[in-house]
Length: 258
Image (cartoon, rainbow, N blue to C red; front, top):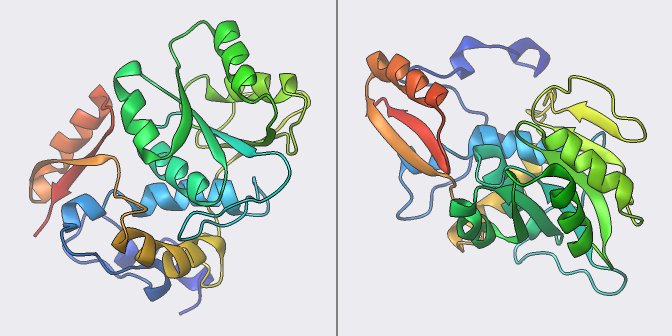
């Protein structure tokens, strides 16, 4: 079956007891990592990895084990807003493993969590926008900025303001986890559509095959955020959706189907 023929194939969908996986988009679970916790990885990894590494988006260097070292030249940085979200938690880890200093945002209660994942600096996204932009531009001094992975309300505008004010921005590009509502003059913004994320030789497959197994085994990459299991069985799906709509922080809502 070709990739084109299997798009939207129900056998590969969610909310069912058994689902078909492609071997290039699967990795062994290290001892001690449960299926419930591991299930927080795939979708968020695909979204963040696509935005960070695909050539039509930020096009960063790929992550490595151990984390990539960059010798010589200015330190490289990338913005990953919403570091405590599912996409952000994966994006922070991937970007750090690729050799970039990660600048992120979160609620103060999640600062330590996001830094533990690999962020160099974390700022309160509740702050006054102008003050927040100034702080981020300040920590970027002496660094080249490779663009932004924007997650959450107001993140596109925040990232664009930083990109425009920082003199050494090598890629004025924002990979957006949410569709942009308007154009940003001077900065390219593109929604992460992941249209070819399942390609067997694509960037996401390379992460699954060449990086994730060893990174998980050695603890360089962790399943994050924490899984919050709210019940067992398909009948709990609606309860999970209702809870998700109320808003969660540094958690992923999970329903067990075993």
